[in-house]
Figure (cartoon, rainbow, N blue to C red):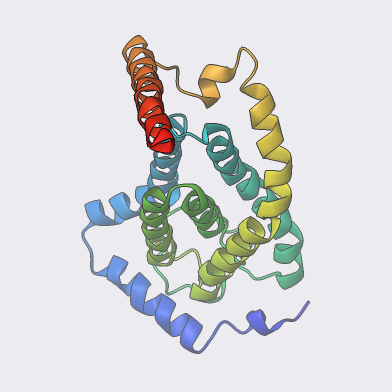
Length: 238
């Protein structure tokens, strides 16, 4: 099927050649490093950020809600991948190096796959946007990794810039548009799980010292109320 994206010339190809040209002039070890980062490293880094987000979310007062937001990240990625199946089939865009053999391809096994949209870019941005909804700092870090992912995919010669942008757009739309529906299901589920044996996975156990500190603070507040009441009564009597 012919689409606007079937035209693989012009600025799209020019930007790809500019980025991929860096691979041609780079030493072999750098090409190998960027290839590993673009294929596996960034996804592992995003998984590590999700783990950090989970550890922090368990300590929040709204822990079940925060955990529900984190659970939406991998679910959203799965939805993005499913949504990309018909999109890729409709666009039917081959990899850049199929039409432009002058490109320097740094990974094998991509010849029989389609180019639009970039799965890696969609997965990275999906996690980044979902994390941003729960933890702004981690979300911004993940967003930086997602942008780096897009650069790496072009550096490796396996995606056009519009493939990367399409992946970003698809992931952002899925995460934001479906988040209310997802949270309507995940938040009650996490609250229910917090009352089961799985509670330590959702809410960090309170240490004995923290419990004692909370009890002492509660006694101080109650004591201050009792000492203020007589003074208040005497003022009324006067």
